[in-house]
Length: 259
Image (cartoon, rainbow, N blue to C red):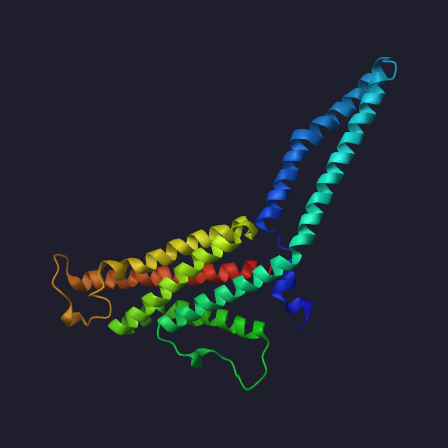
């Protein structure tokens, strides 16, 4: 596997949350310390040119420039050292997150009643892991997302139970990933995880509210004040929408691992 094809190697150039935090601290350092000191040094030179200060202002300017260089260099060394320390760990975190995205899409596939035959993979031919992963992501984008609503309508009660099991697994895994790698996620990735948690929760609302309607034939629905068929259709629509949003978010997260 070449370095160009490896999402893990590309991840080294993708700033982590702590790296971005370091960048923000550096910006704070520039705006709150380096810029004011630079202006002080410049002003000292101007004053030295306009007035005779016995060398005081030129010495002040020299000292300030020395402070700026020292502070900036030390800050750069600290951030460089931190990046070097985290290279191997970031590679492994990327691998874990890649497995996570793969597991979520595969869980949606199983929950919607699709078998492994929809994957365009010939297992008799040697495949690199990233090839299989790309195919799983393609299935999520091109097969699962467009067919989500139709597939929900085909599930019986047992099928809905299996789907909910996969969604609960996805929600638990999402929380675990956030807890384990919170400090190494970029703000963009952290936002994706928060949105994914919300959409997974949304996908469970219908079943948690009306479990007796999920997978039940229309002529066997229980009596309700609001027509049961209306509640069922609305529940199916909202669940499908949440699933499509989940798939989009997983694909978006997967893209961040390859930047």
